[in-house]
Amino acid sequence: MALTIKPLVLAGGRSVRMGSPKHLLELPDGKPLYQHQIDVLRQACPEAQTVYISLAKDSPLDGFLREAATDISSEPPVVIIRDLQDNDTPESGGPSQGLLSAFNFDPTATWFVVAVDYPLLRVGLLRKLRDAYQPPVACFRNADGFCEPLVAIWSPEALGRLAEAAAKGKIPGPSSIVRQLSGKQIDHVEEEAIQLRNVNTREDWEAVQSLLGGL
Image 1: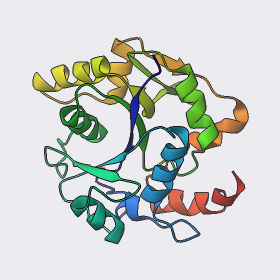
Image 2: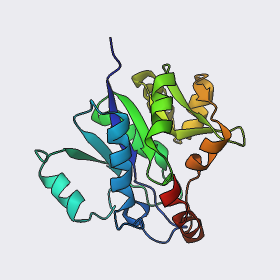
Image 3: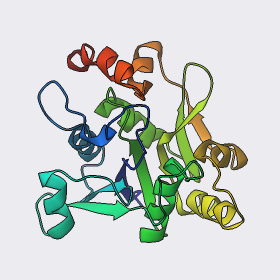
């Protein structure tokens, strides 16, 4: 049986260091970053009827997202999943909160997760991840040898483990769950490394602007 997955853009971060919501950063062509990630995920998962976007409770919405929040019949459909808990304190669950909210939304789904702050990702790399996926979780390993759990495919088992850990107290980071489950970590070739560069500050964002048209 072919794997059925749900594509998810994680965009609920606090963006403290960036100074403005990352998901609304504009690419050189004027497109918001979250829409770029939606487009890339659609191409990587062409059979998916819906793309989901995870947002914090207080994440601002532009016109497109406001329409998506009120009209689920739009074509192609985009569904917003709001975090269940506040994400505006030092004790917040960070990206794990978005994963947990997706798990609560559909605990039977296998979620193809892309964090919004990887602006250089391209379809070919995501297809490579999908082709290599093995449950319970698979992600890339970056050039420093660390896993990238926010460019990953998470099974119900893996997200269930995250939920179990969260229920016991402090929400763990996603990478700790990957390690606990001996999740598959996929190496990339040298020329793909730049696609796993994420942006956290305004300086990071400015540095990738000249690269966005060359991938």
